[in-house]
Amino acid sequence: MESSEAVKIFTALAQENRLQVYKILVEHSLSGICPCEIAEKLKIPRNTLSFHLSLLTQAGLVSKTKQGKMLIYRPNCAKIKEVMDFLHNDCVACHNK
Image (cartoon, rainbow, N blue to C red; front, side, top):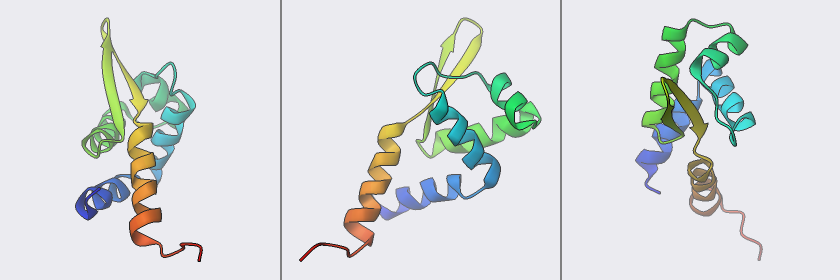
């Protein structure tokens, strides 16, 4: 992972509402969740949520699929693992000697 990609991911998560959105997505990772349910859980306007979901999607943290007329969002758990591996391997000098 390039440093610029990691920064984009950290920037996307470095806001309380987006972090809460991501946590909800992880809780519903198997089934996915529609934006209206997320907005209801967080008590935020849908247009605000749309902005947050867009940033998370641009960072590669979220994917969306269309089911009928609804969009269903899921977390990209592989991307989180990738950024965690980046932190561990490239940024933290904690190798056992």
